[in-house]
Length: 340
Image 1 (cartoon, rainbow, N blue to C red):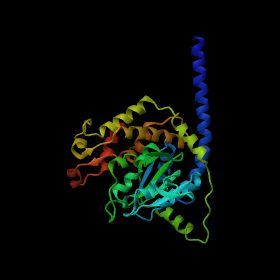
Image 2 (cartoon, rainbow, N blue to C red; image 1 turned 90 degrees about the vertical axis):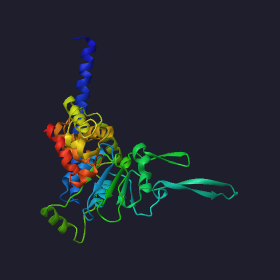
Image 3 (cartoon, rainbow, N blue to C red; image 1 turned 60 degrees about the horizontal axis):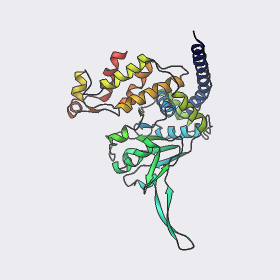
Image 4 (cartoon, helix red, strand yellow; image 1 turned 120 degrees about the vertical axis):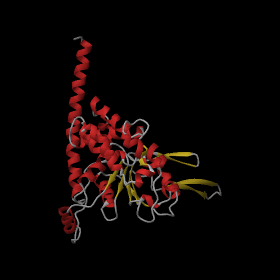
């Protein structure tokens, strides 16, 4: 072995040791985050984990469920526990894009000189909670497109950078309820995950009933800082991914596209499938899931666990499939079978 080869080997070993040490240190903080969220959110472990994974991956999450399942409370709790500056927008049918981004106002100085001044909207924060996002019109929903993708907004030809990190956690009522609008496909694709929030089990609901109807509720304490979260997001991108896991991601995502799938069911039932952004989201998500569990590298089990949250809002059924009662969840489940 040459001197250069020895140096490269030692460097690789040093990097690996540093990575393991960083994961161990962060694991302690993430365990505290989980524990403190669990004091407020009862019986939603998968929902909490998927939301934390989304933030660790640097993405945005769409939480879907009927009213009263603590979706808004979860977002508020995450902001407090992670030390993020959070703002809330209540989406309504009369909400305008300027109510989100901000607008320019004409001001006159004491000397009589007039000039426009930009007044920042609530989007200028680190954690934006879009409450009942599907109650606003598509025009208003689209105001978030540039912010979610580029972490900046443009007003009157000027660009304004949003604070870092910037995350959108939006809640949504099911589309079959009255007074809602479907989100544009382009906006859906910008959510790293779609997290379906179900009813808690009986034990969790019993704990909730006792804890939330007393005189006092325990105040939330910060478990991580903004700097800690950004360091964790950088660490996620350093986690190695095996070739077999990369191939599993590519196989899964491409199998969901009608034009590249070998499945007759997909070609028959799927109108359009997940794009390359789905592969990127899944890659980051499985790394974040491994980090949350304190593992050095993700596995195919991580791909299977995050397949539904990552793909279900990036696929659409044909009219015939909907008429036959086919569900996106059933299609994704069949896509996962070859990887099990």
